[in-house]
Amino acid sequence: MKCKPWLVTLLFLLASRPSQTTSRHNIVLFVADDHGLDAGCYGNRVIKTPNLDRLATEGTRFTHAFCTTASCSASRSVILTGLHNHLNGQYGHQHDYHNFHTKLSVLSLPVLLGKAGYRTLHIGKFHVQPESVYHFETYLKGNTGGERSPVSMAEKAREFITAKDPRPFFLYFCTADPHRGGGAAKHKPHQPNLFGNQQNYEGVREVSYDPNEVIVPRFLPDTPESRAELAEYYQSVSRLDQGLGKLVEVLKEAGQYDTTLIVYASDNGVAFPGAKTNLYDAGMRLPLVVRSPTQTRRGVVNSAMISWVDIAPTLLDVAGVTEVKARAAMRGTDREAPGDSLSDRPYVFHGRSFLSILEQDNPANWDEVYGSHTFHEVTMYYPMRVIRTRRYKLILNLAHPLPFPFATDLFDSATWQGFLASRMEKYGERPVSAYIKRPRYELYDLRGDPHEVVNLAEDPKYSKILAELKARLREFQEQTQDPWTIKYSHE
Image (cartoon, rainbow, N blue to C red):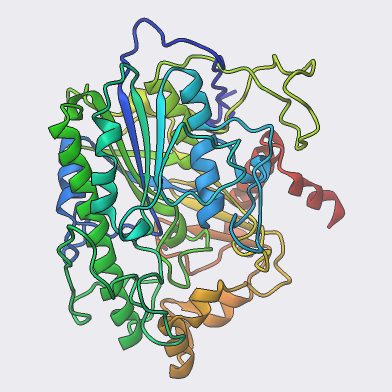
């Protein structure tokens, strides 16, 4: 039987040394906050992202990269653990009253890299817990301008990058741009959000945009409110791009650029209704640019379907870590201690390394990804499970009798409130009734319907493909120990 991508088992030894054939590259994982496919290298002719564009010309730009869940904390937990959050336990937001936690039995990327001989540094947004599961050796705090000041963040990381330490380093660099809100002034509900643009940031040359010139994506209504907020979002993206440029500059000045692998990604789609918190492509299809110092081909455009569960296994592969043994059995409980009889079991990630296909254009057997979203805010229970292939997407809305819940900031956004005031029947290309009230299954033929508007789940002509995708989705849930598989027998 053909092996499914998510069934590929990556075994790593917790205390392993790097293999003799693997170079010990430094690793930079740069994670933006709510950045969709809005960059010059992804075809947006208006937005200015020269540094990300340059990184793409020097490395590999993936055209089909996907988060597994369109929520900040939940997605970051997947990036750092290689596990869907229905297993790692970080179902939703870490902060404030939401207070979701990753299970103590989970092994994270910084912990594994630290045990493999890397010095590890975090700067910027963290947004997962507990710290013991995601422990870094060094935390850089007190940055001037905070997490929205990426140029000064890069400068603050200089001392770590230039330290006289023989160990390779792992730098986890997380901006708060281009998330909604932030800045010196409090956002007024129903007014265009300024995306943190209402103050000056050290070393940043702010790039402003004319709302009349922004590109309105098909999932949004073309209204003055949408355009005004997109212009502010663009400005925030251009600011984080300057942070990326400064970080590359610091690496070069330190003589580390040619020994460092850089990964640029976003946690989830843009913070607009229809994208963030949704598992439509606007919420889960994201930028992924990787530059390896050992690439022989540059400017690669790679069509592999990459999932965020693949990031941790890939970076462990870069580090030469070849096997990990589980500290505790991953069976949805934290009661099993590191010293129990099951602690020597192989630790299984849900993803696989894409390092070997970095220089390929159209690698074989990278043709499907899965999504698993349960919460955003604690009040937003709406579990969705997804299988997406090259042609089709099937969404299982496990709580479909409920109306689709809104994140507080998205509901208050000028984009949504302006849409409601307009009394338009369609939000973008989707009837607003279909956006709020969803059926159990949504099936889309992406070849003829790339914006996922026409649900084919009840169309007899698609009954065979529906049955096949439902079976594969259930198999994925069972293999990844999704607690929500109980719904197949209870409902």
